[in-house]
Length: 447
Ligand code: ADP
Ligand code: MG
Image 1 (cartoon, helix red, strand yellow):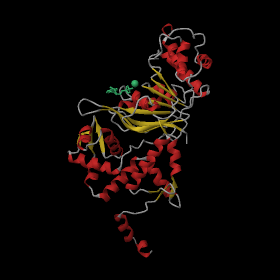
Image 2 (cartoon, protein in one colour):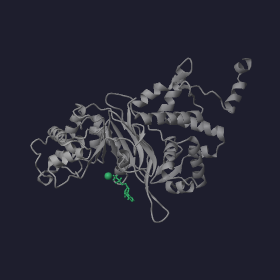
Image 3 (tube, helix red, strand yellow):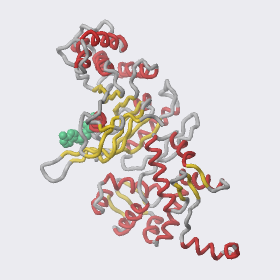
Image 4 (spheres, helix red, strand yellow):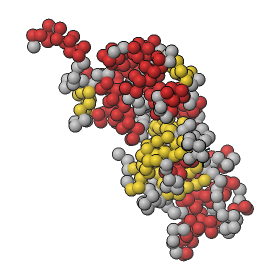
């Protein structure tokens, strides 16, 4: 497992209002940044990307939750990050060299060492010969090189970038991107992780090992997956364009459950849906309420009636949709025939309907059931599925996917999970209905 450098637990951000309502910008969110990865954070404008970035760097304090830097609360830790901004944010009255040196000065380094390091990094980013120039004498691309030099000269463990290429023309941006990638891949810079905020899908697919898509109102993680394409990446390759299309779909359907990822050209198993983290009890509650509302209602109104934050309700809606219990059009949830039957049934029939829907619609659950059946000891290690999911999702998302699968599988009595041995096993306890069936069968009576 890769080393976690930064870990955010249930971080959220809201702004107080004169009225009692507050503006929730980021819903409680878990997120970690691991060593060795380039993470791209994508999302529509105003979804809270910059806000999240600022909390992850320790620059801004969350309204709730906690950010850890190497397992230490970030507010008290010795944090080593730097940030590159879209606006370059250079001191206009300082030369290029002085701008870079200023970053080291802030860290209390002596003058000779400051100069040595600054000249070296200017050379690395292609600014050799521009030491004495002032920012206003430089093109946008050159100014952003100074921005990179200033960020890199402190040798940050994590390099954060907030839309660093957005203000540049296409060609300049492309050059800077590939140069940065080269520095990273050749380990010319000691940076161990890069976190880039962008609204450019191709940029994310070009650079990132992992992409997180943020939804808005309030900001929340919609999907978080690994990009398995080899570098250098070819924008015209089918794996590349498929991934771009996939992300485009996710972004343009803000109310929809993200579809399954396209398979990679290498044929890796990148085909799991992302299971929404909802409990079966929540799904039942939502369907019953929906039935009460003549089978159809606005999702925001449902959230209101349940006294749920919309962000807590959306995974439940997504889960019910994935199982075929409801459909969503233009913000309205409508119950399906199966959903209505589910809501009207008693518990055993509900479990049965859930079981059928789960096996039909959820690949991971189907695979777990098959794997158990195929084994003579009727048990399969969790690790087996962990490794498959890990190909596609980040470590923390893999863990959450497995937790959700276990909760659904247990409820539906598809399987049980032995937490001590970390193995999926046949359901330990059969439901009363199944028990009755069993005692009726002759073999059982003989036994
Ligand atoms: P992004 O970087 O994704 O475009 P931001 O993180 O900059 O989004 O902003 C997210 C949301 O937070 C925006 O809707 C913005 O209006 C809101 N916001 C930012 N600062 C404040 C503030 N001080 N008070 C109220 N709302 C704010
Ligand atoms: Mg922003």
